[in-house]
Length: 328
Ligand code: CO
Ligand code: CO
Image 1 (tube, protein in one colour):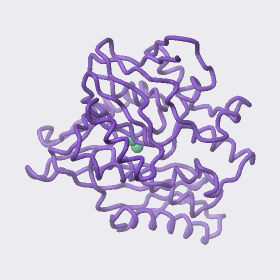
Image 2 (cartoon, helix red, strand yellow; image 1 turned 135 degrees about the vertical axis):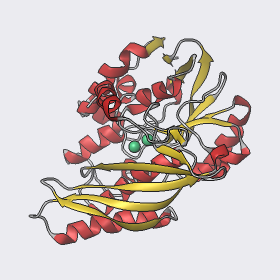
Image 3 (cartoon, helix red, strand yellow; image 1 turned 90 degrees about the vertical axis):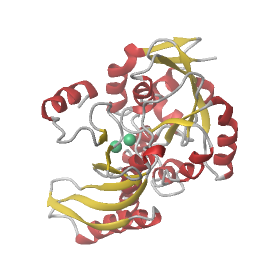
Image 4 (tube, protein in one colour; image 1 turned 45 degrees about the horizontal axis):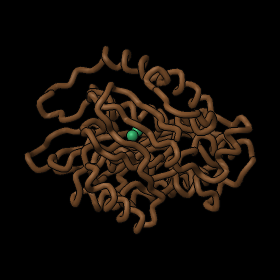
């Protein structure tokens, strides 16, 4: 379902009981809901699940969990509790389910959170994910809005998982950890957070289903700032460009393009493949971190030192809400 249609449906059912305490609700299409418990603690609540993206049930479990946990990190928080959400066909072996759950449990443990139950239903297709509860000090709470003029925007993982998943499903490439996109999808987005209190971070979100452009547009929403992408800096997983050129772009990429293209302007000669990849829906994608220009280089160096494949991909300029792609 597209973001516009979804927003319309949600508008009809959204009625928070105590809106003063709801620091972040449905209104800003953010990664998670945030509720103020005390002056020092806010609760973060999120939920994500999907059908298998790789054949290996243990890797799938890890990827689904890393993806769900990411929305807590995107708010600047730490996950504390997680619960499984499972759909599983009665015709499949139980061993497969136990491998999926083990993958999820191992990822939750790595995140330092507690897996404490869940719910399973019989379903035609396996589905797995987590509902995650986290906490954050309200002063450290980040949302997808809040970018400031002059901010530089870092992306902490390359793009192309949507195309890569299409290639995996078609059997064109290996779906184990030797595939850099698979390895990336099961990597937690927690490391960058260790550095946030040292720098002026103004906004954060993660790149998932709406693709790079869709999530950058969310960041420029409610601001009078235009996000200018430096196309030459966009990192792409190895092999993805060739797969995209041979037509393995997932349907979601076209849907995203239809939904967002009207807010995109360009300067210079378009690289059509890279342009398409900017709409590629991501699974367990990287964080987009909007940091004050003066701090960007230091943050970048810190994240490099952590071994992260991170790049400064955009800048927030005064202008109209939207995204501009600078091709040269
Ligand atoms: Co998110
Ligand atoms: Co999400």
